[in-house]
Length: 287
Image (tube, helix red, strand yellow):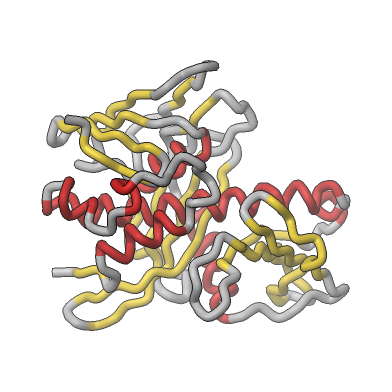
């Protein structure tokens, strides 16, 4: 049986630590309790819930970083002028493995037929660190990690999937798993249906891909909905509801959407007829 290398307690602590700057009201003992999931979620759902909280937080921070850096480069005219660009990847910029919300965004393209980093900028939550911007004329060599993340991103985008939007954002990161006592390094890619309309929440058309370490082989592709669900966020709304038929628990995209749109989602999982509340990076069962 496949086991996740990281413990539930660490997953919950990671999720809470990395979102403290995003939610001013997240100081309750319940939210910072490292045993919350073990105490309040049935055992068979504990790991999926912990992973959804962690992955959803990662998606949120990466999406924010890509957003503000893209705007920064667009204002400079870079995205319009540099025809070599093929996409971007986002990485945590951490020191000594400390948890941080500082991110590094690398825009990648081809120089003389070789993938190179062309523009690189760091950000801290929603603020670009302009002094970090580098853009050498002939680009710079990518690390092995950057190459595999970019390859995985491109592999997922080129696959067959039901599109619910003309534009998709991507999030890619590494994750270690243990399968029969053998550590396997996988690359996780999320494809997120995007919209420019602030009141629309793209709850459908999102996908999760698990790829090998090098990112060139899809091990599993998973549609996170069966249809193109679009929720409308009206002014003053205190929560939104939706049915979820593909999993018995809310997933990482539900967490990301709640964080991004600052609204609780009430998710009815039809498989077990349970009602869940996704409030930012915290998933709970509605009594």
